[in-house]
Amino acid sequence: MPRRLRFGYLAEERLGPLDIMIDYREPQPIHPASKSRSFSRNYNRSKITREMADSPITLRTRKFLRNPLLQRKQMVVDVLHPNRPNVSKDDLRTKLSEMYKVDKKQVSVFGFRTAYGGGKSTGFALLYDSLEALKKFEPHYRLVRIGEGKKIEKASRQQRKQRKNRAKEFRGTAKSKAASKDKKK
Image 1 (cartoon, one colour):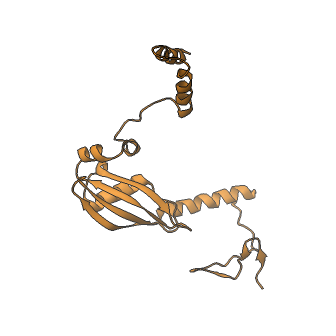
Image 2 (cartoon, helix red, strand yellow):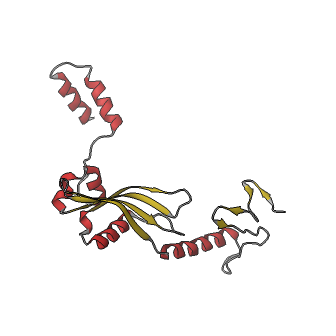
Image 3 (tube, one colour):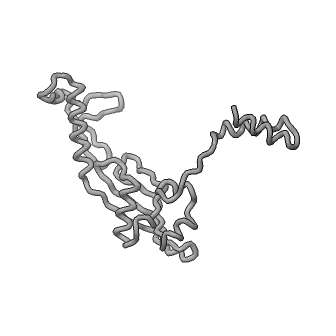
């Protein structure tokens, strides 16, 4: 009879498309350089991470649409990355630019969500006809993300609200004087 664990039967149970067989009696192998279990766990984890980074990814595009008014091609991108964590947006931009033969600077990807259980992510991609079109139509925050725009430095939201409320106490030209006094402090 399978062992009853906290999250249900795991030892000999069929869970969806994968068969999971876990033997709870075998001790975890210990790296010869250290006798501590924590080191061996970290050693094995780093080995697994290296193997995961080498596994291939597959890009599939669907709902492809040519948008001449905004001078771009737009599509939904499905990224299949089994046995691997999420793929960086920079890597996706590179792959899409190679697939569609455009410059990497003209590609914008956003809105990626990973499917439950991992292995598949879905998001949106825009491939602009030119860099000028990208700068004209793309929102500023996405331009900043891909390095095509500069972030506007401003005071925090809370500081702006406090300054606004302090300025309410004065009338007319005194409001601008109160704001300048706040800045000097």
